[in-house]
Length: 294
Image: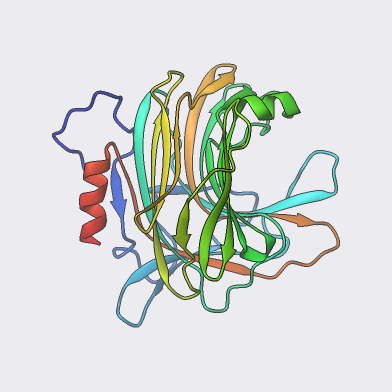
């Protein structure tokens, strides 16, 4: 469902305004033309519409060993992906609010490596993939670590140096202790790691839904922000510059799905994640109203 609101905003409006619950899709392979895939050869094969016993329909995303492999330079490490995205648009200077529901099936198998399931990424005209997302949500350590963060800037034409990493990185790390995410540290741009943190959120059991809400003001100015909520808990709260890349801005991407690291010679298990109620709007109030309806 696409829509607009009659509200006015001090910041630029999101170029995307929609709410998708997948209820109008036929059960089986995803067929809508409203979205695209970050494809490396498997097309829409990883994306299927499923239905729960209560009648709710959702998007099932699966990555298998060897699907959509992308070599990382001359290194032996590669990546595999099954990412679903809204059509890229120009979003510099805009305020964007995003929400989606996510479920790890009861038979989900974590791996001892990175598994990213959401990202918001800016790209430049001269871009060879060396720039990371502004914000990404990633599992590590067999699902016992959750990292939230990304890069606010740098030089997209070359790999990041340690100096650039320090200057532009925004990130926080959570660890799973007894079924709760406890924050260990946070780092915002050119500051050192702050270990005086108190963040906490529940770890959602396998087979249960969780709701993520992400707010972004994508700007070169100091009034930018990135906020990440999980089931109503504020897990990440950065304020400041969110776009400081060298080069000419091209477009922005919002992606959900699975994007994981793998090492050549190690066979990784199939991984499937469920997604539902994917919403992108221009302000938090509108987003909260839509979340309550689902």
